[in-house]
Image (cartoon, rainbow, N blue to C red):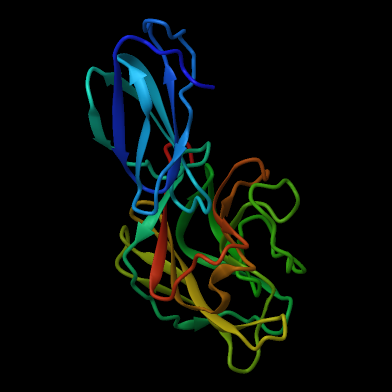
Length: 284
């Protein structure tokens, strides 16, 4: 809705990642009622955008990332306009209600050393963890690994070949999903684990090697989930991903299916040689 024409008007130019931005009047401004929204704008491909001219005064700037959200969170901050303004907005890392957050990470790879006894199209096995892993406030000493790119802390379920958007109360819940998709193991595939480092700073990796997509395409993927003993972080490195995640779910979900930190759902956003790091929240 166009704003009334106040006596003095200034422009604001902003630079950030691709997003949609809206300014909301929060204080008394001549001829503009508090709570009046300024027309939102969408940034260009370089992240820059210009809001409509507004009266001098105090505003709240809300910045929402456009799809795919990935690890981009939403920003809200106070704006004081007393002239032509130029700002750089840094979007926060995306987080769930428990405070877990994600961010791109430097790629590194841990090769598997111990084979998990998985085979075929639908299979799951429970593995012992070399150190306690806290996940959404619960400490675990074991977890189930499945052929479908899932780690399940609640049970060794099979048949979860149809990936879902997170969160959902539909089973499976309590999951770590580096690449939840309909995957199968053949003679060229394997799932392995490995532990590196010394007590207190160990890393435990679950590695899916050259797993086959079950859609008949012949495509394969190699990826892993790495648990960090020192800080509780979980990292998803991707060595190769045919389809770049276009039919997969990536993220984590709590035990009730009521809270999650999704990275992607059926979106072609994964790249070979990339990694995603999920940091533990204060309430996790």
